[in-house]
Amino acid sequence: MVDNAALVRLLRQLIVESDHFVGIFGEVQGMHRTDLNALALIMDAKWRGEPLSPGTLAEAMHLSASATTSVLDRLESAGHVQRTRSTRDRRRVELRVPDRALELGRRFFAPLDGAFGKAWAGFSDAEKATIARFLAASIEATVAVRGEFAAFPRPPRSEASTGPD
Image (cartoon, rainbow, N blue to C red):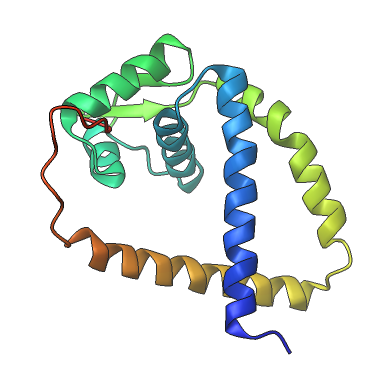
């Protein structure tokens, strides 16, 4: 039997390894981690069929409007994101990932996808369903606790501090 502490260690190890892998992608593309996180959120919204606005992205990333504009300017100049007017409400700006940028991501992440496929081949559909439930519950728990921590007071920022703003 695997105890909760062992599961936490394994999840933490997966997060660290995934972060290293994504960091390599960022280095290869000359992208900052904040830009990669923004791009991931925009792509996830696209796959859900819910395009993000710059304001929604700023809220999701806990960035100021000016910091979000800087992130989007970098992503747009690199060809990873486009700001377009919504077809439903022309006043609204939506963030889109061009096909060229999606293809770049697919090529880079294809070896990892293939390795996952091989690693997961020995699991039955029922086991995969359990794993999916476990991961979804873990994500929900993380989001809930993150929300609690978001309310904690922050130390004042010094002139020398470096952050997303």
